[in-house]
Amino acid sequence: MQDFFTLIMSEKLQSIAFKWFDAFNSHNLDQLLSLYDDEAQHFSPKLKIREPKTNGYISGKLALHDWWKDAFERLPTLHYKVTSLTANTDRVFMEYIRSVAGEEDLLVAEVLEIKADKIIASRVYHG
Image 1: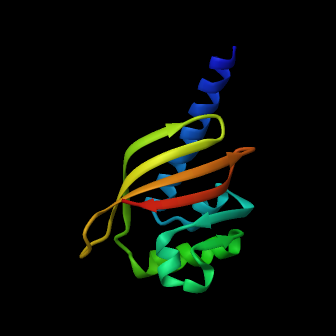
Image 2: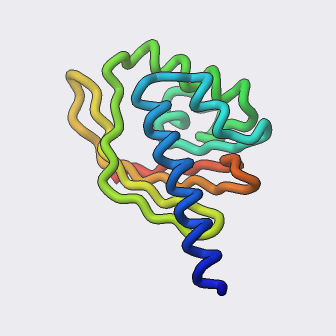
């Protein structure tokens, strides 16, 4: 029975990840934020570089909104191409290629922690 539960949860979390990619690639900020818990935390090396005072960490939907709004406005061609997606009962491990016109593609890994169908934390790693 445990294997069936794990399979169902894995598929549910993968579905959330695909919604995340759809929202991100369409630059639909409202749809993207709807996937997150109100107090979600996010870490990104790019955030650490662009806003050093954060040390790479932000928390809450307002901070997420401001971060991604800025990214979508600065980088209108920003697009993620999924290369690997693995989920268990509370996390999704994603690998994707970050593409922006005029920049070299970047290999990215990201982990989404999910509780009660909402992303509670995300961590980005650059390859």
